[in-house]
Length: 108
Image (cartoon, rainbow, N blue to C red):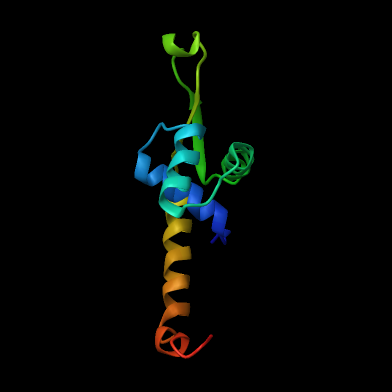
């Protein structure tokens, strides 16, 4: 199984929330909206490219859109491998968090 980094998880989760065939700009906006963190579009595009090479996402070019001057967008979707990796990352974190919350209360 592939071990996902935190930013890879954020990108995959943004795609899951947005649905298949989304592209970079909405992914950046979704991450920023949900986390409150400024997100570099370049970081998202580099991450998408790396995840596509690993089989976690797949992409295809959309039809040209009139509002963008006829430019097509590279749209992505999470693959079955990506979904399995995301589930595995969630399960691993859930296991690590079990029993920790009460211990965090006294830490300053």
